[in-house]
Image (cartoon, rainbow, N blue to C red; front, side, top):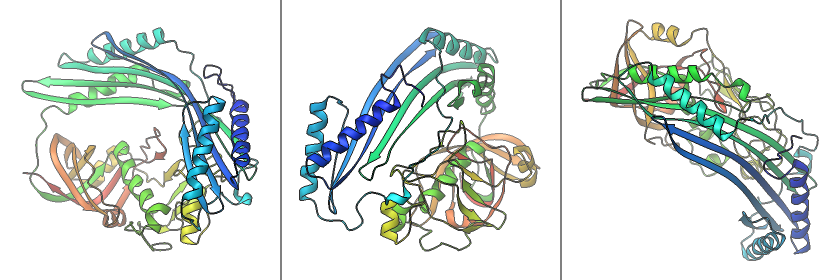
Length: 446
């Protein structure tokens, strides 16, 4: 395991701490327990107009403790790692558990599901950059963006780097620890022309600093995206095809994951309730997760229950083949955990042959969405309504930017009428997708 020297803990230290806390829970009468310990350290610097605006250091430790007295459970969380504080937290969790109602679905994951022989994944790549060097890089990024056009002013450029190690264990004998890193470069610009003022950004993120896009790429893209938004207009109300640019298309799939997640299903708060083995996407769409990818932001050898992760197929030929389940939700539904307590791990959707330019030509006339605003999504009904900005497209070519409009539809219909997923895959997150072309949505404007 990678040694997190700057944090002050090795993976072995955290595993030993987890074992000690589990033993303390047993000593205080718990029939079983689970413990999650995490430590992280890093910093973030932001410059604005050539001056250092912020330098933020973080060094945090957190412990989560869950104890069980039969089917009764109690929890406690602390950031103080002194032995006396840990002992007091265990006592508090035990006192809670003694007086809670029984929950027949509560308890640890079955032993055969646990990731005793989990693989070591390539996720930890510390960046040796110093604060002074990071400040210089941020200034360089900002300067390159500003140099693109005199109409630009800066909202700031940032460099961040962090290391974290998570350790999880339970009294069924499983203890694991996974170190990961995350590094990011971002730049935000403002463009002004007369009374018109627009804002946009660009960023790159990776667990491996060697895979970050160059400063110049981030700077030029931030400038270009911001300038393109000048002269934005509003649209009249209409019903047209819509393309979600790749970085915004990710949210569409995020809503799908929420709708097939165990918590939504056993609460009967999902528009995809009882849709297993039913058509929810067109037949050309498949969707799966790949939890063991090296250097991927969503990779993990086990989930929040300690259950071994595995490749899962959620959509095959448009048909829903699996829910997203942790141990508790699976029991509530009378099913088995899919190793997804805490969410999915590197979700991929099958792409077509077109990049964004190709999708624009295929759409012909319609709306390209590049920014979404608001939270108007109802997972219970599937109703979807969000503010957005982007570009109006005619004859497969961008005509002008648009803003202050709302797009509306229903996720069930949107998914079923998904025309194509572009091959311009955005890899900067746990959900990896290209731009998505939908057959139609309603635009509410003037």
